[in-house]
Length: 609
Ligand code: BGC
Ligand code: BGC
Image 1: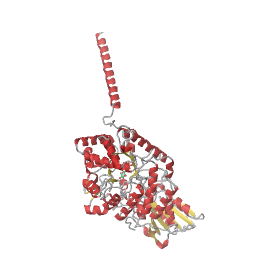
Image 2 (image 1 turned 90 degrees about the vertical axis):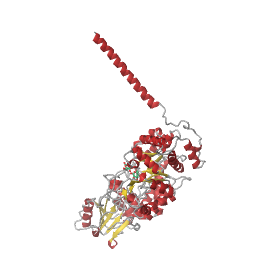
Image 3 (image 1 turned 30 degrees about the vertical axis):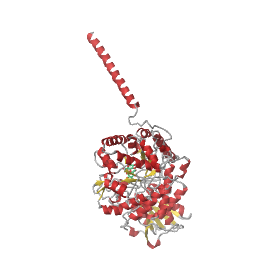
Image 4 (image 1 turned 180 degrees about the vertical axis):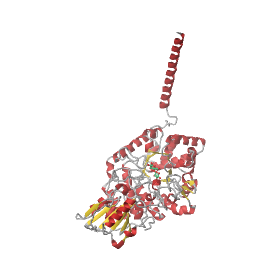
């Protein structure tokens, strides 16, 4: 009986304790969830009519006014750049984040222009809900058209534009791209690429205008001007020259990343050479009004660029007088050393103003608060970075311009833009070999054989950074015309076109007038495209051989991001064309093959035949 009683009271006690723990837990949760954020600046929350909101005032005054109302937490948020898949609009509000980007291939669930616009509006609404309502800067890699968006015009990659050497054309391409970007409510593109490539084994070779510093400067400036334009005194889209500095000269085999060979590698050269080869294009775009410069992930003589005060502050900001903001590259800041806090402090003190985290914004806010309150990063440095960022936001009209509308979306992939892309394609084609004037071909040949794994493949035509970061291999998604289709559209109605990707033709001793074999590289991007040697695949080589056996003449069209090693074979081919990565408009290739227009492109990089 006694035992029973004490057992009962033990049970009651246990239940009481459990209830207490439960209630305490719930209360703590409710308190943490709903108590005001200690970082919140309630003083100016959603107040209308403040000077910084007045578009009649000079930008400098607006920035001063805005900054005088910001606390450290809000300032730090402006320095964060987060990838969209790592952050919700809710956290943009909660953490006062200043910038978001779409990484390669990262868009809304359903990839339509309308869904992009809605996604942007949701993010901007979230920024608007912060106390001061500072608009978000949203960035995207529109490096050959607004190429994350299905239906966009896909222009040739920069290596092809480099082959045109045509500044006016490049400016128009950049402007058309900017129009498609703006239509989705985006005002910041991570282009142009000003890397001067010295080793084509690098996977980013096609992102560059080539290896001639003067050509890169000329076309880089044209691209910047076309992108930024002028819209009621604002920049239409902010260009973002990259990657400061020397990315094109990383030494093969020095990559910090064991999976890569060149990307994230070390540049080994003296300062004089670095300046002569790589600083010139940056000087040109800064004089031309560049507002944002991205620092690459390379190191220079062992010291990582994003922690290099001499490069970022002494040279870029002080010597070149760059007054915009410096943004770091993907996770680049955290590659400085294993301690993340130290890495961040070193990068910001070296001159990085905005950090492409791109993931961990919560710890970033904490590290930065600690650095500023301990004095590891001075308040002057914090204010300098934020002032640069906000000034650029005002100059881009983010505070004042009306939102993009659904009606505006019709510019995406428009007929005019596709026409322009086709012009860019034909002007980028380089005739590498043309024995006995094989080219141009007659549109009324009786029979043409077409083969090769890139002949009917929009994904290969477009290359990396199209729909997906690494691109796609095939004919889905991208809207455009393959080279095969373009040839069919060009020849006379009496011409017989026979297509077999592998070159399996049955001509029975009656060879065709001509065989066209379209070969090349599979899509790739960045370090995943680093390679020892750039060779044709056995399948493509076999298609060439078989087609050659079945036609009187053979023309090889190479769709690739860089020169391919064809020296051993090219002697057997009648004509060879470097098509680069032409993008969605294969018509430009057919234009020159059939003499609608002459070949005018010239090599932007050395190609040994
Ligand atoms: C690339 C940049 C690009 C960024 C954002 C980085 O890995 O180096 O060129 O702008 O990612 O996608
Ligand atoms: C992103 C790219 C970025 C790359 C860097 C990818 O996941 O989509 O934008 O350049 O990572 O490693």
